[in-house]
Amino acid sequence: MARTEPLRLHGYAVSNYFNIAHAALIETATDFELVTTRASQQPEFLAISPMGKIPVLQTPEGWIGETVAILGYIEDCLPRPTLHSAEPLQRARERQLINVVQLYVEAPVRSLFPGVFMGGINSPISVAAARITLDRATAALRRLVAPEPFLMGASLSYADLFAFYCLDIAERVSRFVYCRSILADLGLQSWFGRMAQRDSSQTVMAMFENAFGPYLKEKNATYRFQPVGYRPRSPATEQRPA
Image (cartoon, rainbow, N blue to C red):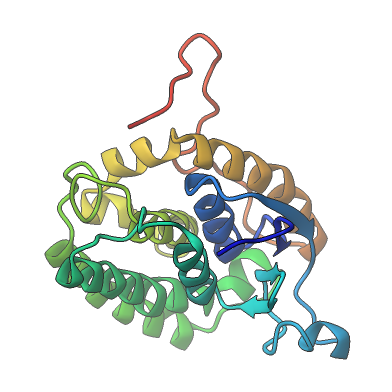
């Protein structure tokens, strides 16, 4: 699809969903600009993002909210599929994995954000309910993934990007609330480390680190910033992962 101007991704680097979309734009070598924007329920923002959430993608044709829809637009604008398998069953399984991560890992840990990142308190009932769902989700993911070296086989897919940024935030919450490593439960530490060294991850996570500390201070959060797997590459060892 021909475009006369770059796409503009609106959002804030603390958001794992914004970071997924940002990484996808980098990985697909799409021409884009970033616009720092907070989620809002103001009428003018709801006009472009109906739920008032970030990210939201500004295109020459109009606005798109919701990360899955943004990834679909990016893919549809490419001359050929690059981060989805060309094989229908495999492509469906990639989307299946995205759904599992989004609905059964990210959503339950998000219910605990108030008592972790936002200066609030999580009730024992919400903590117990989230753990039940996480237990089922980690069991499901063990059945679905076997990094070879990526989650769905030999090539990077949108499933890897979605899982990397959702599992990063889930790992932080799970360690803080349950003293439990989801990555260790899944046996995905090596995959996570490889993903963390990608050029896109280095760029996106550097922005996250710069924004996250001030955000926690602003919210008077009990959580204190702790790196999970991201480490900046030194110039002497810098290389682009395959």
